[in-house]
Length: 101
Image (tube, one colour):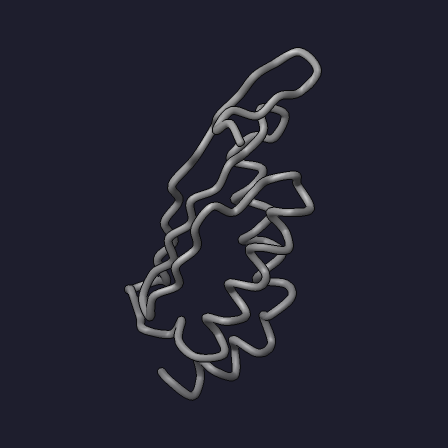
């Protein structure tokens, strides 16, 4: 399989390395929270037609290597993932953060 992808009028290979860090770099991304983040990132990236090459959720940050087609802006991908994650797991995270902090 070639590392390049093809659409009707373009050949592309756009990979981005994205890193997220929680406020004050608190170690809140462990256990179930980390699993939920990983699952959510994969679901919403797939909905936009992106391919998650690598995903690593640490306790205090998230590394994401993703292939993004030219028709999707990187800001659109990041906004979709972060926004939908906060909506879908907001109540759960509020309880966890109150317990930890």
